[in-house]
Image 1: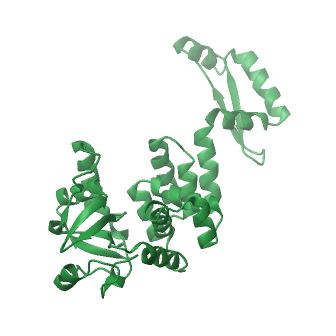
Image 2: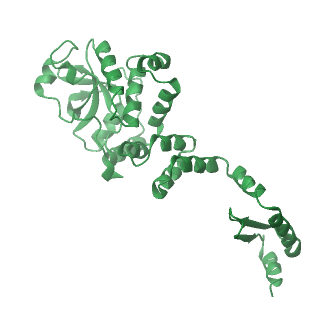
Length: 295
């Protein structure tokens, strides 16, 4: 999926100029609009961790895994920085920052917070969410910023952007998908509906399994939801199939089981015109007993 990698932030790939690093510190400074609400590339050497960061331990294996993901897919979710003169302090995203250094990156996509930019940022984000060319992950990231950085409640946000709370929740949930899946949504390989079907599974391995099946078989959202239900309730699915078996097949199952003295299962196609017979045996003796009836 590396070939489908897409850069975050449309049209803002340039690294900060020396002038903007030195002169733009407040929302009232000239050039502040280049930062507020947008994603910019910031040199890793200009970033420093927050000294009051509550997390002090970073799992080395998890960091290495994240670094590998960043090498393959890039940084899916930008970090958030506070501009401090010509340097930048991390507000959130220290794991991504550390993993990017391990991955050998020189810059990282970031949201920049300036002094007194709260009102400007809210306006920029609300305006951004109205754009028609945003993909589902970009929308989710914008909603998340409005909740976390502006401090809106979901009720406030719902009123502010004119969307149902459930719609906002469904978008934000997409950020729980692993980077491969988020990137697939961004590239259009799968849809947000596919993402929600994947998220209906609690087990991470099952999520990966379903994702791979969706991509390989080019499944619709409906097919993905059906497969998700099968993965969640395999016994229930089998029992439903069993119950739908026509009566004459059930009778044949019983007659064969009585003759062969083993469990017999008939699986019929939906049209009832073809199928297969499954014979269970627990050991070699039972197998010989079955075979003796065909000699």
